[in-house]
Image (cartoon, rainbow, N blue to C red; front, side, top):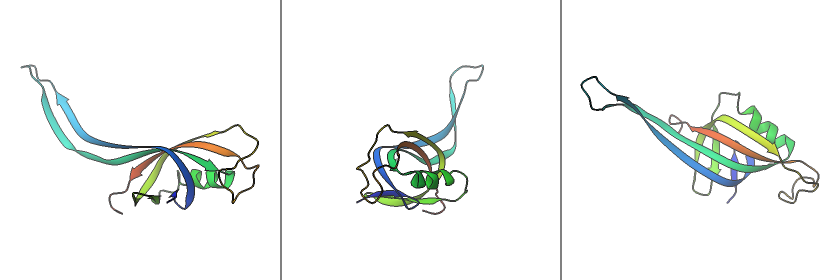
Length: 122
């Protein structure tokens, strides 16, 4: 099964899932550590992928400013995420053979996506 984010085909190389609990450590003058728990952050997915073509890259870039969640489709299930941060690096090369539906001379990019899980939509 193929991966996509917001309908844009991505070729995932690595995926990291991150969970966090909001915990404050307090150290009173009397000694010892007191822990206060204030809840948790929803899951953050960090995806490293290959994107073929400037049009697909521009579509992903637009997701960083549209304030809309988009569906991440994976072989393991689908969920809605906001695109918090994206970094793109163009690969060197003269001919792409990853995506046969696109021209051989389109640029290929390595992208890092930081996706915030949308608990309300899932």
